[in-house]
Image (cartoon, rainbow, N blue to C red):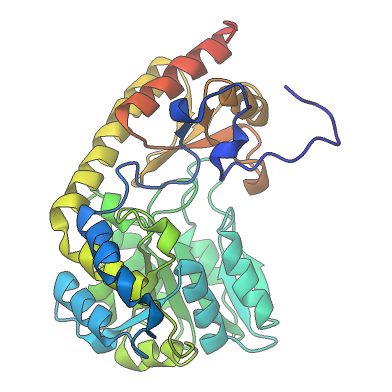
Length: 364
């Protein structure tokens, strides 16, 4: 491992993180929770079909995409319940601009997605941190309620949580909503919702129809395999959705982005194949990590958080020599943990083989 303080920082988001002696064909990128199957073939075909139209401006609005979103989601939702964005991160920015003013407070639960902080900072709002339970890595509902003041405007909840993979149950959300003041809006970040199979997972759309102040956030970067297109969307009451959408630019989504998104939404077979792959791989990895005696948390996402008996950064660096990229969690204040995305089975197996050799002291 390179301990040179002048060495270039490792970019765990890129395949270029692996050393030059490792062929790119053998790299297993398990660091960014992407869909290893790639995008829907229908989305790729849509991109090909509409590429010749790139000389023309896209539609000024997103009505066609919101119509498809409403049809796919069902549950009585209409296009007016949706707003679309260039990525989930931009969605968080718009939400911050719509709800926060200087001096307002918003609650996060660390470890948390850094964009929550950024979105609040853009509005000169104050962050109030209510860390997860240090052992279970679950949200502490009573602590969240105790942290709310008359200045609180937003409560950012990652559900399933990244990087823990844990969820807030239906009962806990009901308890939270029952005591939540009217001036607080919940931002339910549900970008990993497709991978959930726990029956205790809450139904935020139903909560919205029950009159709860909630804005849901979703992404095409995970199960839909369109991370490179930068497309996200949200669901909220029509008045709140319009409030967020007011910050969009004209032509805020390109032609290929919208067409690929609509095609991906309608290819339910590819979505189900992607979800099944992740859930099956997740079960397999849990068995292997348990065999190795490693501590994990119950993930409802397409990744697993793993606690290691040695510094996680060092293990992550050594894994690069095997062509395996994972995400060390020092920035999340968990220096003994790595987050590993569920990949194709060959990638999952390569990770376990390499990890077992590293932890067992076997030379790579």
